Image (cartoon, rainbow, N blue to C red; front, side, top):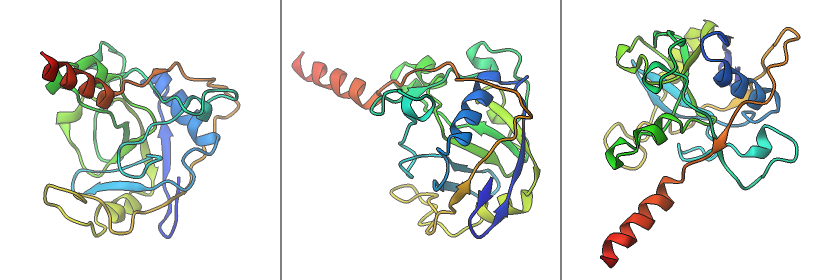
Length: 213
């Protein structure tokens, strides 16, 4: 993972822990999806988050990003490979340097499962240990070189640390120049995916129904 103006972060991936998550990351990376995207969220002592095509935490990958002929206007997600979602083999803890998949949280709407299965392309790298995330997010690798770069990025200037627009958003978001994965000849194939849950559409439909009742 080469970051413009910062250097290279080397990450070891663990397909034995999260096979489909790793397959998805490899597919996106080696097809150039991440090239030019940014780290749009940074929190000192916690993590740095990137991989969003929209650059603001709302973007999702499309079917065309992982397979030729896939729909270019249809977003997808992958199932969460972590203990809370019934996936027992992933025991990787969220310690410093671990890379994990970002996802939505719709539990306030009574849709925990939809949130568990909402990861797409966004990932975060831990800047410190955080046991509260264990078993709730799909960790799938760990930094083996370049933690100094992670710590530089976690401490970049942000718009604001207060709640509201620009919270934890870097003033100058660090750019991912490229991500490439050396698979050593192993073909991890196309990941298993599903149509993305449109929470905004769901909310509007239910909100309108409530007004009509």
